[in-house]
Amino acid sequence: MVFLSSHTPRKDGHQPLSKFTEGLSTLVVGFAFLVLVSAYFIHNPSSFSRPQPPPPGEPHWKYKPTPPPKPPVIEHFPRAASAKAPSDLPSVPSWNTPPSPHVNESTPLFIGFARTWELLQQCVVSYIAAGWPPGDIYVVENTGTMDANRLGRLTLQNPLYLDYKRLTDAFGVNVITAPTLLSFAQLQNLFLYIAISNGWDHYFWGHMDVAVLSNEAWEDPETGEYKNLYMRAVDDIREARRTRDEPDDQGRTGGWAIRFYAYDRLALVNRTAFEQVGGWDPMIPYYATDCDMHSRLFMSGFKQGDVSVGRIFDVAGSLEDVELLYHRDPVDPRLDDSDPDLHPTLADILPEDVRGGAAFEHLQGKLQDLNDAKGHGDRLRWQGVQQGGQGEPYYRDAEGFQQSIVMLAEQGKKIMAEKWGHRGCNLKGLKFEDAWKVEHDWE
Ligand SMILES: *[C@@H]1O[C@H](CO)[C@@H](O)[C@H](O)[C@H]1NC(C)=O
Ligand SMILES: *[C@@H]1O[C@H](CO)[C@@H](O)[C@H](O)[C@H]1NC(C)=O
Image 1 (cartoon, rainbow, N blue to C red):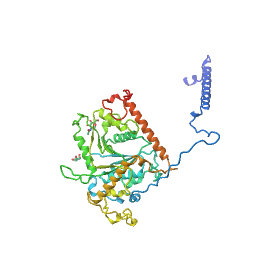
Image 2: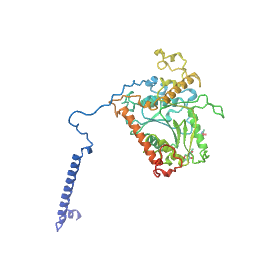
Image 3: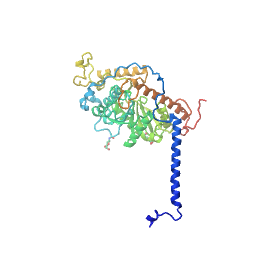
Image 4: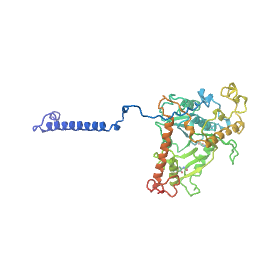
């Protein structure tokens, strides 16, 4: 009877006694451990993760001067503020309407959003107006505010504010929210991961501080046909496939890794090439991480190219009225700013202009002005135009947030130098396997 025997004391009586002493010694050891741990924490108050009571006496903190208030940001697309669907907005200029049905190639475009809604809105609308199918645009919200924007809990003056419903309902684009705040390198790896998950063998990614414009004078040299920015990007996917095995000017035949359109303001990524080199290095969070990535692709024999598909302006502010991107006639009297009742955002939607017409010229001039203004000022100033959001979910001090990122970026440059034994981006002569293996070349 196995069941009974296990409860029957053994004849020699040793077993129960040794069990008792075993239990006792466990208790003693456990108690001693507790005493030691408590003693340690009592003598090392900094080890507590709980806040400590303030020291006695006068408070000794000295506060920084309060930064001067910034003017509140304003609505740059009044009509979109009340739009519930794309049909409430002007239609895309007829010469830039996306092909229907969709081209055979998949054309997902990722736009990462860090902060400053007015720039994101302008960027997204500019791609739509240049012919990109809205359903192919993926805004990747990287604010670290979890579901706060989706639930509409942040306000316009908050740097991390994004109008989720306007993006999905009025503009018809997708929004993916990063689960926590990611660095630039981590965000790039998220793009890669989303592409892998969706089975896309390539994808586009673009900066949010740009506005794009089709070159409306451009015609296909072979057919004489006008092509908008989107169709020229599609053509470039086809061109990359056609030339994948052709050697480049350095004899590289490993296929294309990336094609740049105006630096990396917009780029086409070959997913498998990026996977093959192990993705972006998350230890180099901001600056220099692109140098690390593109150098490793280069060392691995992949080709990289620069191609033009249209105009891509680098901007730090928004058009006063984003509706200009839809090419409505700018000489229409209703555009006269001096009479608010005649302003087009309050009036009916104006008829479209013609391709390359006065509306295009007017718009191109305005975007060029924004581009030039950015070139003259502090390039990152756009990241600090909003100051509000106090009391809202996941509130962060705007200046502190900015300062933290600058410090992380600086640290990343140092890690980059350690990784390759070299300061700066000239890694000539180094091989893929040399990472972390070479001594400093500056000593
Ligand atoms: C797109 O795919 C369809 C179906 O496979 C094919 O008939 C068509 O020729 C393709 N179009 C182009 C432009 O390759
Ligand atoms: C994409 O990268 C793979 C390597 O993973 C390569 O074989 C292929 O040729 C590349 N595609 C193009 C279009 O260059």
